[in-house]
Amino acid sequence: MIVRHLKSCVVQLAASLLALVVVPAAGESREEVRFAAPTPGGNVVLAIHAATDIDALEPLIRDFQAASAPDVTVTYTEYQTNDLFAVARDDCLHRSNTGRSSAQIDVIISSSVDQLVKLVNDGCATPHRSRETAAVPDWAKWRDEVFGFTFEPALIVYNRDLVPSHQVPRTRVELVELLRSRPELYAGKVVTYDVTQSGIGYLFAFYDAYSGATTYGRLIEALGRARAVVRPTSADMVADIAGGRLLIGYNVLGSYAYRALRDGAPIGIVVPREYALVLSRGVMIPVGAKQPELAGRLLDYLLSSRGQQKASAGAFPFGFDAPLPPDIDGPVMLARSSLFRPISISVELLAVQDRAKRERFLTEWGRSLAPVASALDLNTP
Image 1: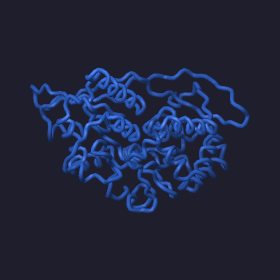
Image 2: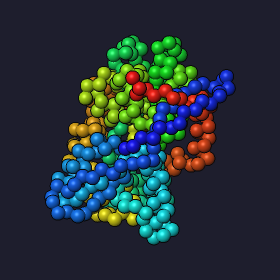
Image 3: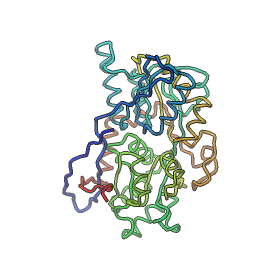
Image 4: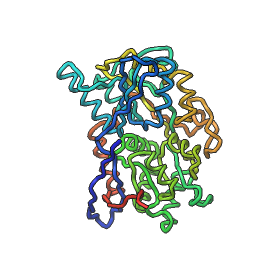
């Protein structure tokens, strides 16, 4: 995916406001990746549009082709969550106005399930029912139109070589105290999502605010004082922590962190002890899909035992009823512990997308984490 760098600028802040480093975010230009049909001669194309790294879904796509669709070519277009939502929303509106889609979109996959629920509520989804969808936990599906197929906790990640073991935060309060007591070590070295750029980052922050309002206020204040860095994706956060450019990450998606740990990155992973937000990455079939039957087969594959086993062996190691990997600091069975806070795929998520609530939330976020666009690029040696 082609990356667009934001122009640097400096905003004058009032003395009471604190600086936050904003790093370049991905732009609107996108590349389409084609997975040719395993069986020569197939001319059917299934178009997936997703806010998920292609490396994470490629094994699942290829296994789906091998198991269920050897004569099908799959195209994959990758976005950031907000960009994907905009494209899907605009295509739905175009179809409503003209009776035809503006682009082929057969399957939508996104971690920002609130955006998928908004699309469903606006009449932009096609229902799908099967044995596999019936088995999905109630909190991970809505109206037979959005289905969660992964189990992904938001975690604390740290550089194992550079953060002393006695300073590793296991609660949000401990993270706040660490940032306040050790500014010489952690100023400019902590990272979280840029909630203005990332749909999933906004979703996590929104739920944080309502799950522990007092702690959340102290936390974002501490992040502001520590000149926290923000990133648009978990992959970016994990890469900087593993490379030693940053030391601690907050609300990092566990799937990205554990994949890096499994590949040898010098990182540690902690389940916050107050509560652990867990989302299920959503999949839906949009209205106007050119291949709705084939899209349903892919959806069923992702939810099937075979698809779940392939996912857990690859980029999505956590399962609905599986124990946490032993090298993660947390309860053995997260989904059965008192820490489990699922982000339910339900009508409640419409509140997250309410325009007035969003504006108020981002205003409050900005008061504590007033962004300063900077020329600093942490990937520069």
